[in-house]
Structures are given as structure tokens and as C-alpha cells.
Image (cartoon, rainbow, N blue to C red; front, side, top):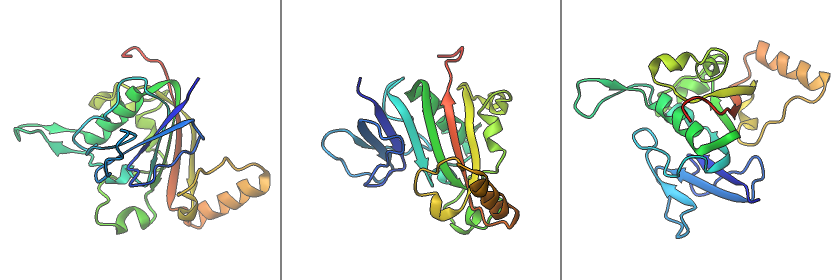
Length: 199
């Protein structure tokens, strides 16, 4: 069976943290690749341009912080929640049991704020809005269903690769020291897409 991975905000070079057989990407400024593997879309206002259950995994490296939390509706009379809509879309295109891997700058580190295009601030606890048991974003229209496999603070230089779980006590102690010293600029999310009532 062929496995497929989608990288959000991929630019010209999608990443494949799980080593899937086929690699796809979507980006606001993506060039057309002629094969439909890299597609252009503004995910703050449009859905992910693939059908339901298309991928075994999805990644978002330094992308979630660029997705607005709140925008006015087209008529200007209401509000919509693009970040929550995107999390619904990620869940929609994942097969049940599929994996979502994200790395994003995290509050309170200055990296979360210094780029003027960062409009979505994530903390070490933001995952609770999208994962069991709480799924707090359901109040705002989140219909997906994820389980957190891992939520881990990390340093920025590691955020551009797949960050493994600390393998031994020394690595865990070193990570704990970095966290205490405020040297962890990013948070890693690794979620499992669950089969939920809405699917």
C-alpha cells in the first residue's frame, strides 16, 4: 500500500518527517509543479485542496503561527476562526490513525512575537483545544478529534527537522534544563487523528 504525506506551508520543498512513499505540499506562494503534488492555497481562507482521508500524515513546520485566530466573515457581520477551521481540515484529510506533526514558536519565548507576520500565539497548553479529553475548541466549531501522542518544547534549531522523543534520562534532563532556562522557543505537536462521530 502506498502511503502519502502532506506538508502545509511547504514553500518549494515539502518535508516528509515520517518517510511516506509519496510527498505533497500546499503553500500560499507555491509554484505549480505540473503533477499536482504542490498546490497553491491560502489556508487562512480556503480548505486544504484534497479530499477526505487522503493522507497518512500531515506536517506544519513554522506555519501555524501565520494562521489568524479570528477574521470577519465576508459580509462583515460576524466572525470566523481560521485556526480552528484549519485544524478541522487537517483532521479531515488524515485517515483515521493518521499523524499530524507540527513545530511552531511558543509563548513566552520572543520567537513567537518577533516576526511581524506571526498572528497566532501558541503555548505549551494550546493542544488541549484540539485533543482529548478536553477538545475545548469544540465550543467554537472544532469537529475533529485528535489524541496527543506528544507535546514537547524544543529549541528553534531543532524545529526544522523531525524532533525525536528524548531517548534517555540524560536527554530528558538536558531538555528540562533548557525549559527552565527559557531556551525552548518552539513547541512540537504530534497528534493521532481519531475516528470521531462527525467523520
